[in-house]
Length: 227
Image (cartoon, rainbow, N blue to C red; front, side, top):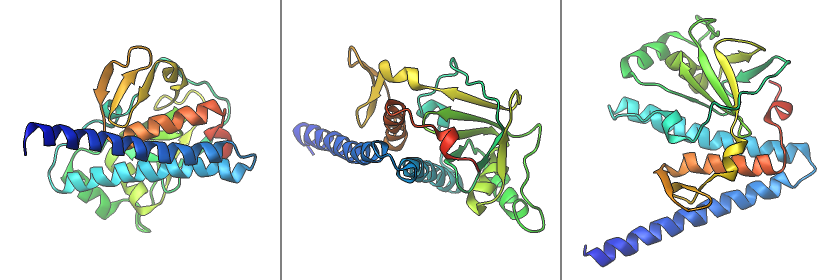
């Protein structure tokens, strides 16, 4: 393949990603405009589809011995806008969009054989499970207690509890990033200069842009999902 063919294929791939992104975002915006709460809630099921895809791919890479990037490195996050809340609620591992920072194949296989069955019902450990919820997207990233949490996702059982002032659970709102950054189908870029911040996988960038629409229409994950 000569240089021109490589360049053309690269351009076609980028264009294809943009088309796929636009297709998803058009559907999300259609749902966001609805006055039907059930249709607005559907947006977060779309978020879950992408979260499940990412988490499943991470599991497959773990099984085949491939290196895993950090979820928090691939997804644009910011911890400067922590959300204070007064109500308690649950993140259901089988229903909510959750991704885990799994990293060890042997630990994961052992956990799958022992955790989340009738013989050993899944329960949150008060000092082992650490997680962050990112609004407006409603995405939970588990960054400690990863392998047991992953069992809960795979077996669709268990929940993580969010309570005020809980030391191992935080909620952050990344809405302020949308005035500064965007995903173009391949790269995160600055809004004003179009400067590339970093490349990322399509699924992560798509989640970021879905959050832009959720923020635009002021749709609340915390209000729509009371597990």
